[in-house]
Image 1 (tube, rainbow, N blue to C red):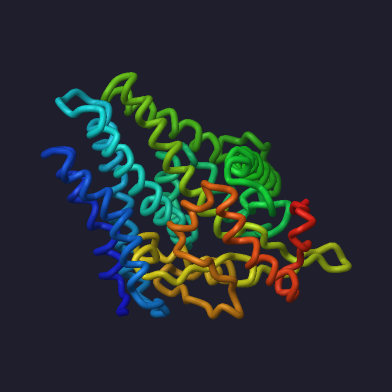
Image 2 (image 1 turned 60 degrees about the vertical axis):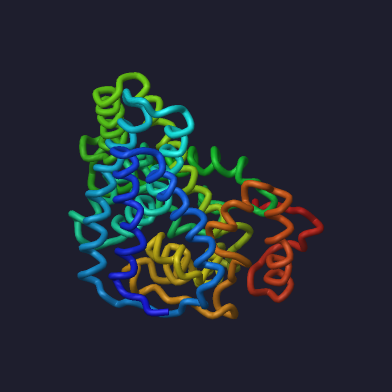
Length: 359
């Protein structure tokens, strides 16, 4: 199917007027946004042919990312007011709004912020950082490029899911581990520059202070209920990001040479997904193998790599994220594929009947 920046813009921005209309006109519009992000995406992914096209429009991609970043902050305020503010909406309407807004933040805002923190332009990186800060996950802007991309598929990366580790075990470990690893990386960077770890330029001040600022703004918008809703939206959105990390690296390991160094990151160290609509909605994040092999690539340039180069998920990323919430189903889907990778030597690892975790 054809793919250019206009397709990315259409798919990512289509829920926005529905979400705003839901806030102003009623829950039926909110439900439409919710169905678009969930059911419509699943159906189109299932029916559309495998998508291998690239867009190659760096300027258009950056313009869309800036627009999505601006829309994120607008929708965040509207979400808190809609869900926690005064009005006739009943609990069911507010719950639908919570999931609709939260899915947009989790699928689109997270993907866009991820794209922005990889850009060379300082202003673009700053925008991505503040999107993460607004979701109380600012440290990801440090930990993701400095730790995850460097140590992915090794025990040194807290965001690589270990074999037999459930998502519910992975979630707290990854959050704590990435916060700590990012802080250590920033302290090391400051030390190289001749500063103490807690020099004023340490971005962790901004991550924590910025998070407190958004909590205060939520209080101003809707009082204590606004803060509670805002915190829940952040938890829901960040959980989706970590769920994607869990799915896209589960069980994959890099070889360690005789010198103790790990082999270079390759497309074999990330699970790939070629599906059309979820790829557009998440700015090609499911083309994860090419992203890790080439982190500086802009999202329109990412390729759908062949299966003999990059391991491929059995279903689309959203479907597999849902499966990961049911550990027995997840293992039934993923372990046979891992067994093949281990046995053929494409990925180092144990035979799965030993149930040895990455350690």
